[in-house]
Length: 190
Image: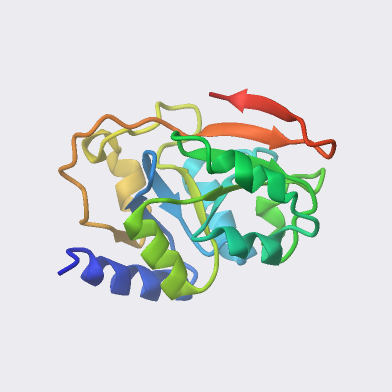
């Protein structure tokens, strides 16, 4: 029996109503919302006190979902992702079908195909991508464990996932790379 099904149901209700969830990801604890809803994304920017010029990461459940949100995906990027062990976010050109405020001014978007079972299940059931940004006020330390999340953040969300709150496994943000049009890689964060 999967121990997070109740969390999934409550998250779906919040996401479908344009709310914010606080949830464990394949990296650190994150704030999430419907990545196709500009109003929902704006709520996260406000809670984090983050400048809208700083874009956020979008999570997808499967490689095949990329074609819905990238106009010209380079499939060699997927080959690269299958060789990495660290969760890796890729900045792609040609974002489409997402809220304008998750797309960078240059038309790029940061996407990570999650390998986390909870996140995959949630995204598949929601049938849309979700935002994944660290659960902290902009400029503060990213919370690697649930106990490090401030009350300001906890009080600002519509639902807090119970799953993995007691998990003390060391966590770190994802690596971030930019997949250039010529097939070369620029490492942004490792």
